[in-house]
Length: 260
Image (cartoon, rainbow, N blue to C red; front, side, top):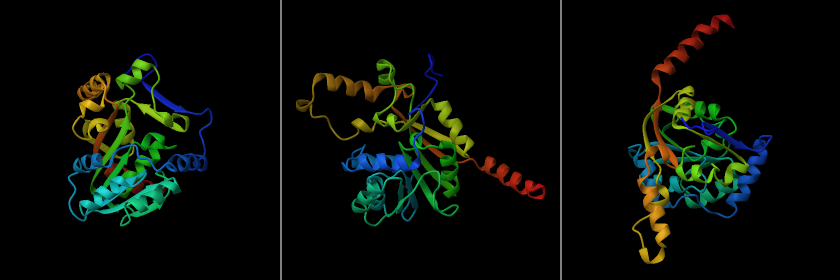
């Protein structure tokens, strides 16, 4: 558990923006057509899930569609959803054979158990209702669905050094938690964390070109790549449905019918 007021931070404006405001802000961001990660790292996230051809993949907060494009190369049936129309437009161009939908993670427009693989990379912390979004992820996954959820770590060493956690998106809405707190949120939504990995995507882009980087860059890269997981930038959480919790919820729903 972090100390000194760092155990849980939700960074946002004094009044949380409305979904309409968030959509407008992200439309402006995606107007620059940039991605937060290079395409070649997306295969790593998918390989965590052991995908098989024709598996149905949902990317929540799909952004510019690079993960969907990677999924297409693995013969997956791919679908993405993003709150920003501009992101959806770019994603359609990047991965034209994927189904792209504009919508919110808290209100997924899909039937129960529609997907075998569910991915949410660096988006959950920006949702207005993370508990509802987690419940929706669980709902649309099949009984044996596998989930890859990437979330920020409040104990990231460089944030602690500068005494200012978070990214440039904190001006919109950004929740930054410990691993235990993220695990608790996911568990509350019916997802069980089975494995956790550090997210090292920033330097997972190929061999170093020493002639093009400074000594400082090289040192910082080495530090980043060898950080203990407790100080990593983001957690890669591999989850499955908590079947016992699902059975209890189903039992409780049926038991309550006679009381309504």
